[in-house]
Amino acid sequence: MINLRRPNITEQRFPTFHETIQAGDNDLRADQVNREQDTCGDDERLCPLPSPGHALFNCHDVVSDSSATYWMPGSIRSSITMKSEIITIQSVSLAPVASVLASIQSMAKKIKRCGWAGDTSLEYIRYHDEEWGVPVWDDQTQFEFLILEGAQAGLSWSTILAKREGYRKNFAAFDPNKVARFTQKRIDKILTDPGIVRNKLKVNAAVTNAKAFLDVQEEFDGFCNYIWDFVGGKPIQNKRRTMKDVPATTPESDALSKDLKKRGFKFVGSTIIYAHMQAVGMVNDHTVSCFRHKECAALARKKR
Image (tube, rainbow, N blue to C red; front, side):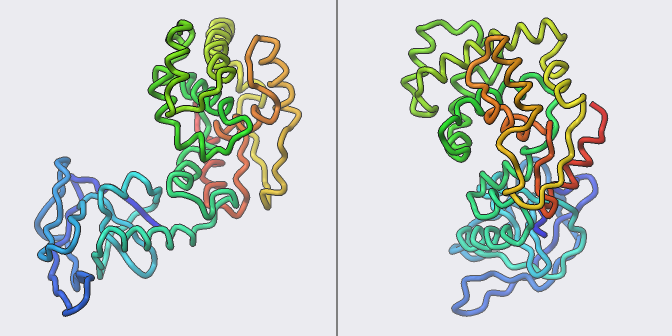
């Protein structure tokens, strides 16, 4: 399993490296790691590397599997999802950024994930590992996924993920109160931005949905109070063995879709709504072999 952690700077100390460079070898090897000297602070200090041919690596993060441990460059750190604790390390290999990235991608494939996230981009893997299936009890995040899932209709989710920040910028950080007040002039401007899917029907639907969303919030004292009632107030724990076992719709998504349409929502067909339910953790559709299945099940047992 790959692991990434940010050490507790009040407890963890970074190693002193006894470095040797082998002639003709681009790798910088550290034969010994101990817990002496420098404590890494919030200023993101860099580990000094004596060879000018090597990139500087950020001290904060460590990637490890059973056979190797790498200091992570900051540029890669935000793209990887890791877990668990690393306390003792006996040997470290520092390599150029491209080499480290290749190693990370190779190690990432060893983790058991749902089939749709097994051999994709690092951003897609991060989404699977950190967000998909995590119960969402926050109204604004629910609204974000309603916009994104509606935008996905007819497209791949990877396309939407790549444009997520474009949506965040154009749709007021997914604040339904602000989106509901968008004027036609604002909508026309949004439609010129290649950072989103420039579909007039979908963009207009996002504004329409914001207004309907606010109505639901007022009626039920929160959108989450409304939407979670369709699954009895807690996530449905499925035990899918393969992705072929995952349906496109369920009776719950049919009922929710029908009710949303009655309330004036657009782009909320049952297939789109089931995808939304999966994303916000109303159902746990990680396959049983996926490492996130048990983790999301545990999150579901936590109190709101």
